Every structure is written in C-alpha cells, then in structure tokens.
Length: 64
Image (cartoon, rainbow, N blue to C red):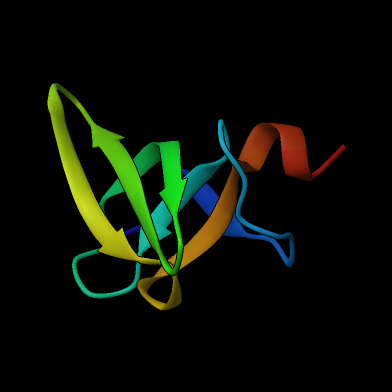
C-alpha cells in the first residue's frame, strides 16, 4: 500500500499533520498536554502519546 505522506524529522506542534505509529492513521494536532497530544482524525479527536506520533507531509509538497 502506497502512502500519500512521508515522515519528516520535525518537532510535533499544534497544527502539524502527524501519523500514529501503531495504526498509521493521519490527523492534525489540536492540543499538546504534557507528553500527550489531542489529534483530530476525521471527526474523532484522540488523546495520543507524543512518542506514538511522527510528523508527516504530503508527498507532493515534500518533493519540491
């Protein structure tokens, strides 16, 4: 399965697009609370450990 995103070595911040390491779902960081982040995936906000997230970018943008 080909992903639309590539992992980038950036710090997780509010507004960043991130991928969960366990199930590979991509969402947007809405809040950071200590070592956890609230990630919006579709209509569902999830509370996820920062260690389980990696920042991603769309392949089209990252290849420029």
